[in-house]
Image (cartoon, rainbow, N blue to C red; front, side):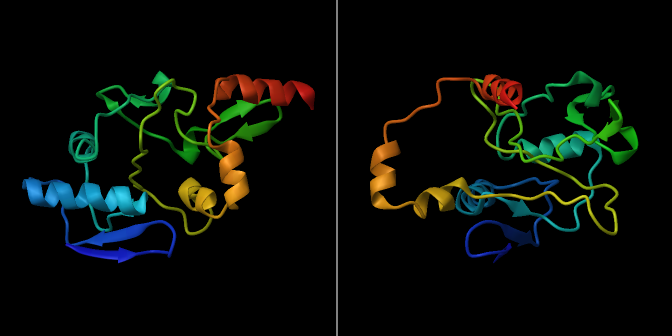
Length: 169
C-alpha cells in the first residue's frame, strides 16, 4: 500500500489497494489509521457496483442510510445516487444538493464519522467537492481562544440554527 499525502493539513491518496477486499487485519488497521490521520482518503482506479461499494465503505464503519429516501437506490437502499441530471426545481432557480458548505447528516444527534463518495461520471470542470479540517482550524487558534471555548458544547440542533439564521435575513 502506498500512502501519498495530498496537503500538509488534510488528505492522502492511497494506491495499490483494491477496496473490494478481502483485507487482513493489518491492512484494515492501516487503512483506518490513514483515515484517522488524514481525514480524507482518495482511492484511485476503483470499480464498484452498489453492493461492492457498500461492502468497501463498511471497512470504515456502519453505513448510515441517506436521510432523503428519494436518493436511495431502490434495489440497494444503503447506497444513494446524486446526479446533476436529477436536479429539483426550487422557485426560479435549480437547487443543487450540496452546493453550499455543509457537513453531511450534521443534523443527526450522532452524525456519522465520514461520507464516502464514488464518482461514476466526472465533469471536465466544476462539480468540485471540497474539504476542510476543523482540527487544523482549531490548532491555529490562539491559546486564549482555546481556553475561552474549551467548555462549550452545541446545545441547539444545526437545523434550528440554520432556520433561525434565515429568518433574521
